[in-house]
Length: 166
Image (cartoon, rainbow, N blue to C red; front, side):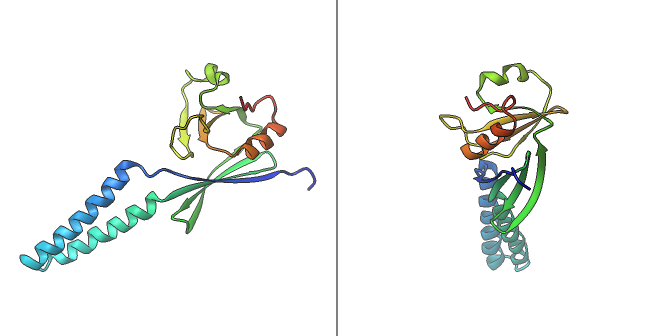
C-alpha cells in the first residue's frame, strides 16, 4: 500500500539493581551449598544446582530490550529477552492516542494529575536532555517510550496536533 511509513527502534533496558543483587545472592548461595556439601552433607550439592539454575534464569530475564515498530499509524512494542526470545507486549493505534511528548514537556502539564496506569518500555535511565516520551492513550493509559528521532518525526507526520518534539 502506498504511503506506509516503517520505522523500527531498539532500546536496551537498564538492569535493575535488585535483579543484579538477586543474581549475585543466588550465585553465592550456590557456592556456599557446594562448600557445605563437600564438608558436611552431600545432599547440599543438589541444592546448589537449584541456586545456579535460579541465577541463570535471573540473568536471562534481566537482559531486556524493547523494540518499537511504527507502521501505518500503529506503534508496536516487542520485548526481546536475552537477544533470543521475542514477545509482543503492546500495540497502540495513533487514532486512540491523545498526546505524545517528551516526559518533561510543558505540553503534558494538563495530563500530569490524571489517574493513569503507567507502563514503561524505555531504558529506565533519566538522561540530559531527556530522550523518553510519554504517550497518553484513551482509557487512562500512560506509556513511556524512548523512540528514535526518525520515529517521532514519522508519528508527527501522521498526527501533527498530537505529537510534540519540543
